[in-house]
Length: 193
Image (cartoon, rainbow, N blue to C red; front, top):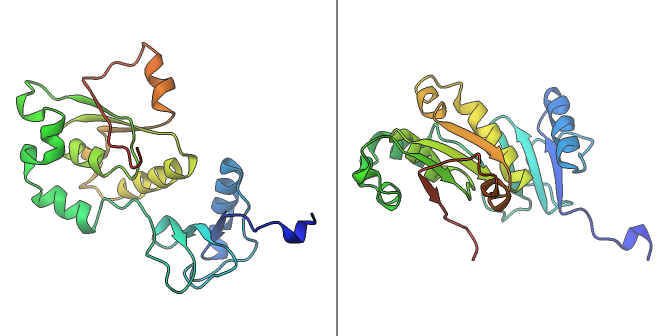
């Protein structure tokens, strides 16, 4: 089988402008992913690669390519649904707050979000005063979370919330095996069974 018959890499790192190339090179090296050599202005029009980890003007996102591709997957707690939920969310009456027992707690809880994903539940819990450790085993999801947290730190209204959040790149099974880690609640909301 020749290299021409091999399918293209599923995920590649791409960059919007040459100014972001250094950051994209570091990310590609960290994740062991190939980097597209030329900047691309719009990842949705790119069709030679099925998925891109795209570093653009809005931050780092995961983007399926092609004309009918859905919008990007990005961690953004400073706008949209996350921001609305933070401002108008319903406090400790929210389902995630009830699930961790926040209404019955006599002190702020330390919660381990063992399946952090995009961090939305962890963000809500941190807005409610909880100390939250976010575990994410996927290197790509961890990179998206790290980027989202860094961008959110630029918004002074979010800093107190983010100071209650700690991001850890680890598998929950390994992390929990270490008896040094103590939390009040282990929160699991897996995307897949």
